[in-house]
Length: 165
Image 1 (cartoon, one colour):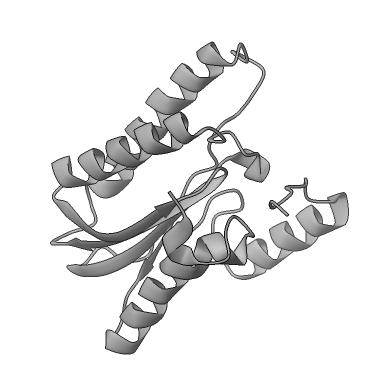
Image 2 (cartoon, rainbow, N blue to C red):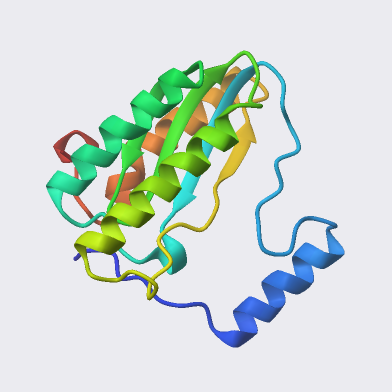
């Protein structure tokens, strides 16, 4: 059975905002506290987890563009998964400084293109920012790698991670 997305309830939204306010993190965007050389797990989701990348063509096209974007930002992608409503990528960088701008541009370009194709211009928000997690040690690196590989199984897109296109 495929993953079904849903909107957050008002209570869930209020609890999330309260937690973010008490934790001194941005209210409507994930914090980006690190900028050093190393490995990062980058995650981004379609707004409210809507399955906007639901066709194989769109998945494949976005995957190629994501890897090219990261390469042009001097970020080496070591593992990744692109699913209909989100993606994860494990990157190695000298500095994370240029990656947010590159991802922002990719998200802006794909938002515009997909909204034009789907006749949703001015009606639909496609992306909701992104998060990055600094990989602190080898153990965390392998946990992140495993998380990426098992993600299609976790979301019921396949039973074996090697079956995902």
